[in-house]
Image 1 (cartoon, rainbow, N blue to C red):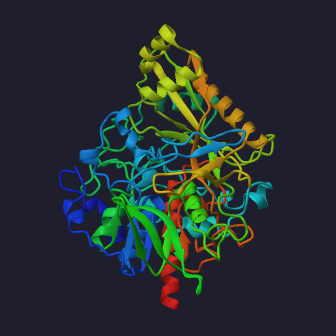
Image 2: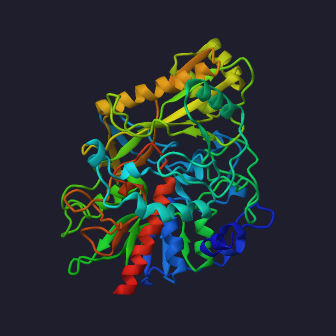
Image 3: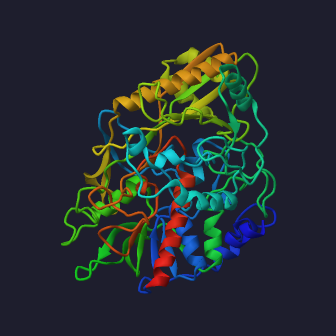
Length: 544
């Protein structure tokens, strides 16, 4: 515990009653003027931006993070109400296209300090060693310019800092977790029963939800609102983990600040700061170095909008790589009805999971694979599931009345990176005069085969557990890619240390740099990669 506290004191920066982050941290937060040339300005304060912010603040750097959304206070701002949590999502205008357009909003965008981790389900699996070499091993996707071993120590660190609870994990690189697994709810019991009958291994966890008091953070109370925002601060998100620790060490978080352009010195080719809007006024924050962490839509959008004489087609876009290879995960959900009450919302949504189908199976007609977890759609989302089956009127009401009898499983399918799945700028502009993003997406045959296989396995599990009816809805989740990490500038936007090939003092530390996405929620990998980037940056600074 001492080592965790030395790395991240956030759990001890919560008020003793567990209700909120110590108010003094925001009231007495160090602030910088726009004219102050800070050591680093970070665009975005989600998984990657917050981790980099905290690491750099602890090193003594003068660092400020700008976020387009509010600085949330869980005690005052969040409610145990599905509809009342809509403000957590990025819902500003975007265009979608392609043969399989991806709806944007609640399942893949965040708004405010903490980013989309504020409303993620807490699921924090690692990527597998095979994820870093899919082209070499499977002939699909792309190889990363780093290996699993490069991120392993950072996985260990972040899992302890959040912390993560779960059973010993047998897949990928087998490992344990710092906290014991949570007790299993009705939904988890259904999965375990069906998996056992189907010959499938299932484990409890991993979730970044405290199982027992951790510092001043309270135990999970299993209220089932993880996807909206944890009112009791048991679920880890940067808002209550790495951000408070960063403030304690002298960082500034400047909320409600929409960055519209990165400025470049035409003579030196170096970034000099960022233009942003706040309170209806345009500002420019000077900085010795810029890091972008706006995630897979807003990061490419910002780079493409940052044109100049040196970069007429967008910043870092000499080789037309910005915005390309954007990926989503196929995330179908299959529900089964049982005679007994299940009450699937009680407990962490991704409570029990299996990665038995994660790797390429040479006996199957597709490459790579999928994972399966319990999921727990709340009533509004459940209504969308039911309506997707064509039910309406009295039939629809009967399904909704039956809500307590349903269990639900969800898959994460590894869709492959394709160059034409990309972000471009649309003609329409937002309220700041900035062109909105257009996201074109089309599935390939391998993607469709994975969706079919995952759905068949989930149906088999639920029927083996005794379901008398099953229904499936096709969904997508977890954006990654768009500014990917690569061995050279012809194939990507940043190098192995997340430094831009084109601008020497520009970093990108969010999910947009991931070359592949695995069948895992990307949050833990984004944080681990940002922590590694911080170490590499500090090492380079010491050497210069």
